[in-house]
Image (cartoon, rainbow, N blue to C red; front, side, top):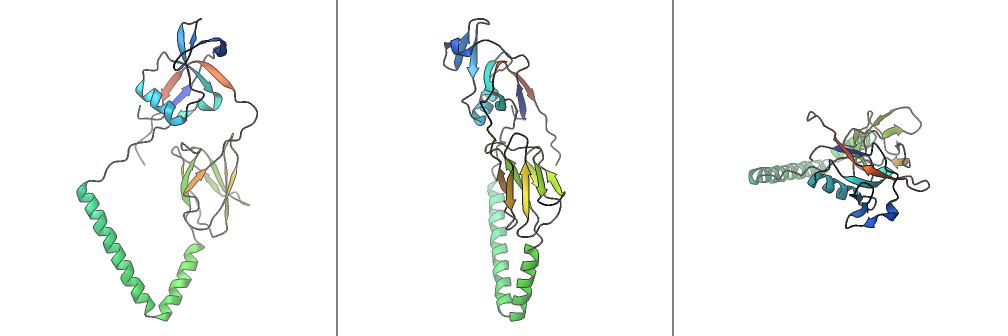
Length: 225
């Protein structure tokens, strides 16, 4: 299952899981004579692996309510060919040599030093901020990202990525908020300040546990950028 998929239980079961006969993966329900897989202690990657490797049309499961959501399997990264790797290495060496030559040229003229310093300060007050928001494991789509004290903002896309719509300056504060999770403030120091943002789950009261036949539905994602 390469595409993102959503897990749900359309008709929750009212049987008492604690009275089931224990099995390797959960418990055996005498009413429907089926094994109920206990997913409550599984991590997201374990759940993804289970539904990727197994036929799931007739699986009954026991979930925490926050586990019934959309899962995005992590795509495998393509390995660079030998020629591409050599090309990148040469490009890196060329870039390094060019930068070194430029730095040598600048140090020879005090006027160029001052101009370079002014340009750098100008760039620091004109920062493009982009990054990825996750729950610690998987990307979070639809996270609201607002510049504190304004109405200017954006939201993360399906893969949790975002690009803030206006350039920011050092010291600006972005506020990240998401339903069911604790809001987070992030102070912008440079362009990498928001390259990776993890929101913490807001735990309130006991977690609701739902049991029943698992419905899996693939969420098809466009290949267009």
